[in-house]
Image (cartoon, rainbow, N blue to C red; front, side):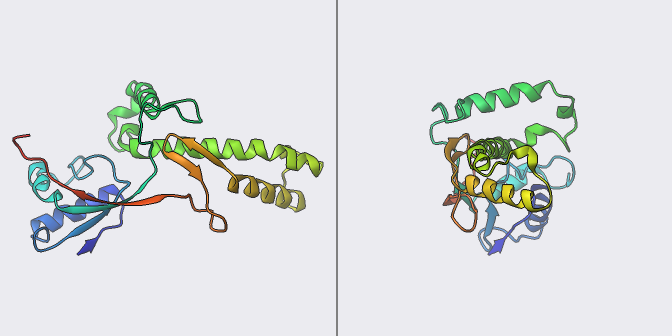
Length: 200
């Protein structure tokens, strides 16, 4: 059993080499992280010898370990006033005319897996900043008073406390953090990948 924890590009190269050496199902199993993009194994910039149709034969019967964070209902309005479907549509519309789409290495459409997390992270920070105003006022402080000395330490502590209390529904699902660790509260998911037959 191989556990591959890498970014998409090196993961694609590694799996390509594994297929060439026969280190795949049924003798060997593979576990991949769940944050890879859709059809991440498809050849793009390199490994032209790794034919996509060949990789397709072996990507099935692999396992993906992920977390359940995204909204179950793509058309349900979230606390950020957008549905996941509306957010995806706006993202694609905005970047479809971008000059970046012609450069595969930095094409933002390759990173649609991450955009919802970045969007929710900005909202979480904005909410924490907003919630910090009253606690700061009680200490006769403002966000603008931040420095790298005593006042800054007080402001940072208050900001962390407010961030810890964040609890809202974003594009990627519920946004809340565990006490002590600051880790986002998530539900683990173990998924089995099945190859679609050529007949559909």
